[in-house]
Image (tube, rainbow over all chains, first blue to last red; front, side, top):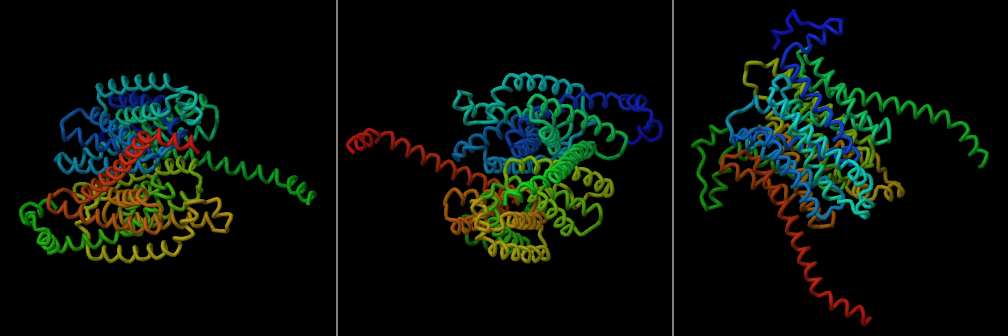
Length: 306
Length: 312
């Protein structure tokens, strides 16, 4: 890989030329296609994740992918299938433990327990399989430059399935996420939707692992949605912003990662976190300024009352 | 490790006493059991508060942060324990600063965690670039999964020292912390410094997680932190009893896991974690079955109850 950008393909200030260089190779075209598809679904799924306060579940399901991928290597099944099966099992496990433990809300203990078991199984699978380190790192951190045409096909199909199901359940699911009690009272199948969401999350992770890896799909899920939630309270607008941001971070991360010798995942997470930090900082300063602005008349009035 | 397991170790017999003696005749096993016991006690005690305060996500994130911290230390050439402690405590304080409310906390932790993982990727690539060619003894996989059988005497001593400190502080603040965890509003009204206690606990958690991650890996830390405490929390509602039970369970699980790993050749962290998971599932399942039985009995008796109520 370093051979490519030795001297012929270095970035310039000519953006058009840069983009031409970027998309010159077939593997980069595939990376952009896959990254775009994953970012769209991750942005949408992330909105619900943030809304439902299920970041831990998202993080865990992503890590379950680790057990799935290593298990797939061990048993000789396609990675995507192994990943999805593992995620499905984990979703069932979380839901069952949650119900059995009698928790009304999604509890962090059920998630944590499944998380522990899956990590342990993943490690056991590595121990049993002999194909070792490089595969593990690919699963953990993704291998964005090694995406084949078949992979893109699989990702495209899963993306359409995900989007279809999500659009179909969006309205009742939004209701169920905002106010589960009222939703349940008005006949929305809250539990079924919660379980369905975990399954969708498992699918999302299975698809996204090749692009960003199990450790970093979480960044695309949580950060754009968290920023969107900061900007607006309107659900449709928040979803649009989250998707746009996820796309932007992925594209920029891929581009910068291509022109520098550092991993793509680092740039994607750093752009995302940087934006989040700026948003929070700006909000904090504005609130401070607002307080100072309002403080004087308020103090004066309360002083007058006293 | 697998080389050691290959043929030198004694086979498992049904004479448990003899098995135990055979196991303890190895120095690395004595070290592992000693360090495992100390870590289990600390994790069991700290873990109970983690369960009470719904901070499983924070605990898990901190062990991932520890992963990044250790790698960063390796890249910059700093002592791993020092870089680990600094990183985890800094992140813990940041997380504690997000406040007691569950709502915003979850997302904020997730966002920070995502970035820290990204940093970890960068450090990993820098580290493998630096140490290219050589088989790296300090690989990311070791940090994630650890090897309790490879603990040195110095490490055990460091663990003992730090653990004693953590337990001491925890016992000192246990009472107000319990109050603040169970009912933050009332505690605050009573003048308990809820916010400060929360921050202090996060620092304790960070120290526990980082010392343990370096020794036994992120996987085992989280298993020992969460599951024994979750079982204890289900079994009893009395805090003192639950604390003792949680620490005791953690120690028992560690011993069984290490012993099982010793005789089967599977990694001990896997054995301990899976054992803990199975125990938790059994405890939850059995109480669930008990609940169903009680429900059934009530349904069967319900005409009697109804009659009694009608008579009254």
